Each structure stands twice: as C-alpha cells, then as structure tokens.
Image (tube, rainbow, N blue to C red; front, side, top):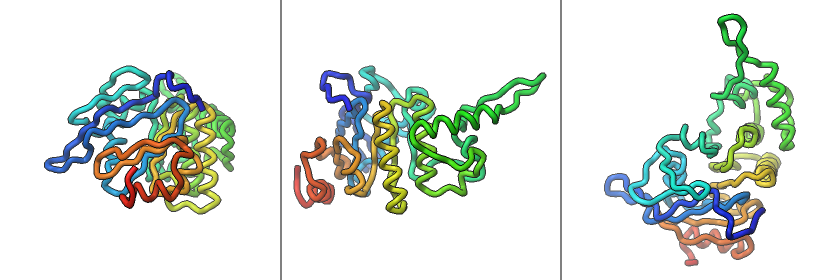
Length: 253
C-alpha cells in the first residue's frame, strides 16, 4: 500500500450534508480513501453509511458538500456515471442474475459481440475464455464459466463481483457487507480476495458490522454515528474492542 501522504486520494468527500425531509441523514461528513487502501466504513444501523455510499454512487444528491475523484471536483449524478469513472459496487444482494451464467454476469452490460451478416451475435467463446483468465489471475477458480450463478455459494458469488471489478479497470471497489451470512471458510476467501484486489492496485471501501472481519483487512477505519463522522483511525491505532465501543457509543474517540 502506498503511504505517501502527498499522493492525491482516489476519493475525498468534503462536508457532505443530506436531509430526507426533517431527518438529517448526514451532517457535514468528511470521508477520504487513499490510493491502494482498504478503508473500512463502520457504524450502527442508521449511522449514515448507506446514505454516504449512495451519494458516492450517484443514487442520492448531497444537499451540500463536494466530492473529489482523483483530485478533481465531480458531480456524480447517476450510478452509470459513477461506474464510468471507475467506481464499482458489490452490493449485499450482489446485483447478479441467478439464472444467467458466470460469464453472462461477468460481462453484464459489457457483452462482446461479433457481426455475422446483418446480425450481432454474442461472442460466448471469447467471453468464456476471458472470464476464466480474469478470475484465475486473482486466484479465483471456477468449475465452468457456463455454470449458473444461482448454483454458486455466497463466497463464490462475491468472488465473481470482485474479479469483474478488477478486470474492467475499476479504481474504487465498494464492498457492502461482503461477509454477511457466509461460513468461516467462505469469509476467509472473501477477505483474501479483498486483499488481492488491493495488491493489484484497487482502493476498497469495506462496509461491515463485523469488526473482526474488518480488522483483518482494513488499513484505516472511518466510524459514523447518527450521521456524523466520529473519526478516522489507522490500522493499529485501535483494538477491536476500541472500535466496537466507539461504534456503540460506549466511549468517545
């Protein structure tokens, strides 16, 4: 990981404010992710994590504040725009289509086609080969690229989403509760894939309620409570118990 503090962060969100009617979801939140860093975003339900990420993804528009991506001020007005910038999100429900193959999910929205006469046909052979190669490059083994995603385990499904982000040149990968409801073995795999993504140059936002999982992969932790940033801490500055206590409000920073 680069520790050069002079290097421009991949994303910096400054003084972000968001209201939903009379409810203040975010109240002047600053949030920064450095290049090739795993940044944990932590907080209890209602802390503002989802709202902050949805603003970064272009789902919500902030009422006030500015987003900088690779040092440039940006206005992210849609998920499509965010994706075009290089921001990929692996949601808790994974946004994969169960009835489609691994390859079709891998290339979803980016399908390769070949023209035969007046008709464009999906180039399945090339997409299958690229899917296998891309996943193998990050240590992900699959039985067959034609296998339906619905037959995969939760950890395997997460791996497809992470591998897809790497292959298509994402700069920032957002993992939303990636270890939720996974077995110990599958959790270990997902944490390994997260570290592999970092080693290959990605910045990662790791959103989770599980402090133990976060502690194994994160370089830094940003904690939100009731729409406000409590603090950002570097790895080793806090123990697991410290983090849990700050999230719960048992102790202050």
